[in-house]
Length: 339
Image (cartoon, rainbow, N blue to C red; front, side, top):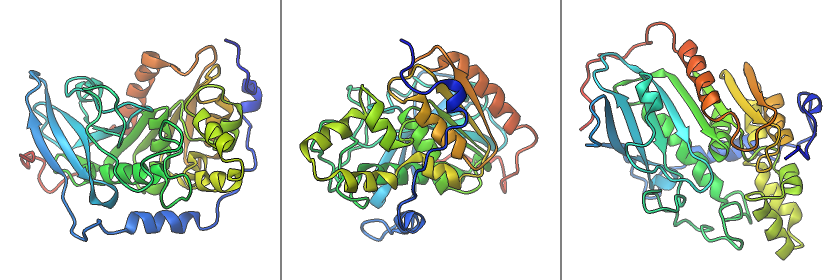
């Protein structure tokens, strides 16, 4: 289907006025500095699972996320590694859960640690997600996740998700087999938006790979996207005609195009010009505002599938170049894995 959005030449320079909400940095600093709900810090837990694989070790992970509540995931590591590993932390697309333990093996097969973070409340199949969302605002007026707790930034769903993501990055940096200076965050669609948010909230990342990112220039996306998930917000506002201004004020704190202005790590973006789910102008809004070194691969005749495995090949090359050279080191790279 031909693109109904801006042409590529205009997208490359598209920098719309996107006002930063009042207290943006203070809001996120306070959120990430909150103590666990019971005041008692909990350490990440790693339980090795037998997937029947001999070349990859897999761990069932539980990380204390927002409010100290557990966020689950899979940690894959190449068998036989003898030095601290670079790590790719992956956030998932809308509605997806972490899936089965043996599913996502590319990064471990390339020689890196790979943490797949479950997205709280998502994962609609029996083998999907393992992380619940029971906080206030977890129930939305409109089906889906985009309007959960949208009445205020404090109760909004993605406040919890972005905090979960930051905690997962912190967890892998503390893992004895992972080099804390060689951590890359990535994701497709929703996962790309989460990765961009993390890029602005966490210092010292080695790289960021937002792939057809969601949650960018949300006001424009809600107004031009004709298919879900952005349509959830439009549906909410059809029901609540007097809430347009406060809803977009809430969403501004979670707009990845704002977080991109705080980023410093190198970034490799992808954008698809016929994407009806994440319109290309919204993805380019984040790319053009991204404050660190950056590059973008454009898939002119693709929809939301983007570059798919073709782009994965580009990412493999890019991450290998980022991680070139010896690891920065741990006290002892032979430290045993957590039980």
